[in-house]
Length: 172
Image 1 (tube, rainbow, N blue to C red):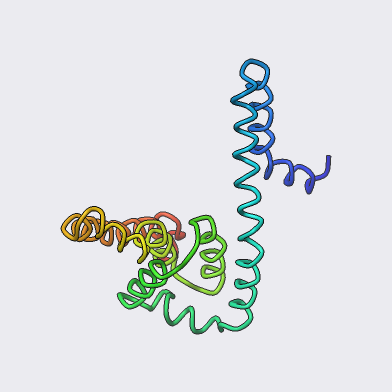
Image 2 (cartoon, rainbow, N blue to C red):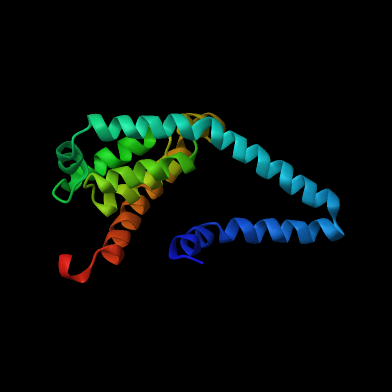
């Protein structure tokens, strides 16, 4: 087996393992296994509907947004304003969280700080504007305000810890 084949097999080992596990489940509980396959298929087709447009937008962003702009807004010298941009971009973004990961990879490639990318991901996951509006409606502004008061500093803290942990020692 070539190195390329081993790498490809390694990338899909979780998929193959879960498929094998589902086949084992089918032996004893066919109804549950069929439910697993249906749910997996639904998620797969949902992603097929979303990911192509996201990949096109990423390609356009890669071509149209110069690296200098990302470095200025989210790069190592962006400071507190970079944190603000990361939070605003994460809260204003649309789509499920798995869409954020290719965007985050593109930001890293263009020179964004690790901390700002982590803050962007945390914001995308926890502070979306429509979600906050629903939260205020159903849980009240006091609950939402307190949650945001705890969530925003936590996202910043997580980003700084990730940057510290993932940046080589010589770069500190």
